Length: 199
Image (tube, one colour):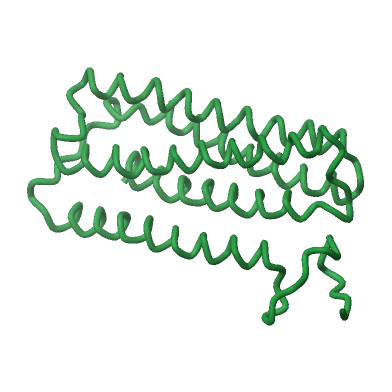
């Protein structure tokens, strides 16, 4: 088999496209996720602009500072994910474990803040059945939260592999794939935050 220099694990054979199976599968999966979130976001924008029944709550009711802080935490988690991959590529398993743990903790913190936001909004009368905004808000943030939860489980599995010593510079492709997924989840939130909280 002809070696491909950018493949980190020789056992991860490339497809006919020259892209490893795992990476190709991840990109195909994320393409479907782009269509899912894209349809929701485009529907939100169309109704927000064109429907007289679309009433936006005030910034105070939306807890913008809390959401902004949560956004910062998620961006930090993307940085620690990059550092985790860089660490294992340098065969620094201990640093990879630390950075990946930080990524997981940031994800858990994000979900905990959302768990605080939801009851607060319910108390203010912003529910999934209170209007168009509530329907879109809970659908999109809830779906995104499920993706964050999935990323936490994915990263926890990678962390377990690292603790067991099953990852190295030659076997780090799973960290890369987890990173691709995590960055996508962060990117979705970077789009949702201004749409739902600022504009």
